[in-house]
Image (cartoon, rainbow, N blue to C red; front, side, top):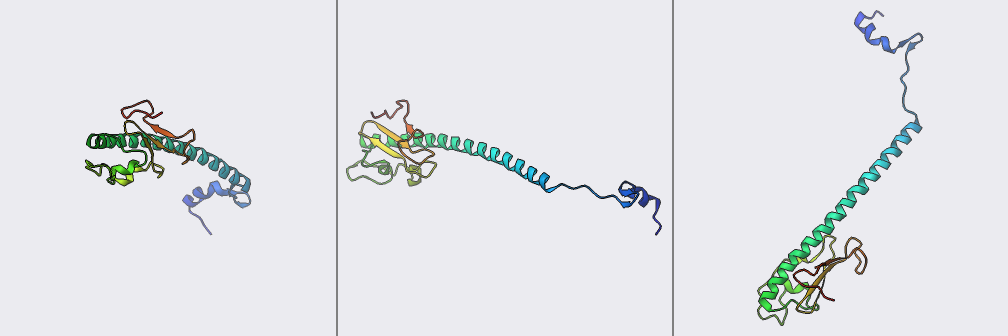
Length: 159
């Protein structure tokens, strides 16, 4: 079989004294090391992304509580007081029996839940209020709970 000069030139890097040169590949150990490194990198990346996501949810919770404060202020203007603890935030959506000047609904039912899907807890004596989110762990009374107002804001904080 006769090869052209171009074919001989192209095949020269693969030619050896014994014929065709064998190509080196990766061993199974090298493949396992690469997979382990990729897994480690992916774990680090996912962990960082999830941490950023939780921080965003905490911020969204505070923003949601601020919006609820606005609706509570409107409720207070119409009814001369905030809803009681027993009435809860539900009083912003459904008219309480003792609210004669109620002009709601003041918000949508879906806005009464925090970003984790847990209903906000509401406490009030009629003059002041506190809104609490269970936070990322979904359990009330833990260190990650989010309270509004946290600095004695417009609604005042209950003791």
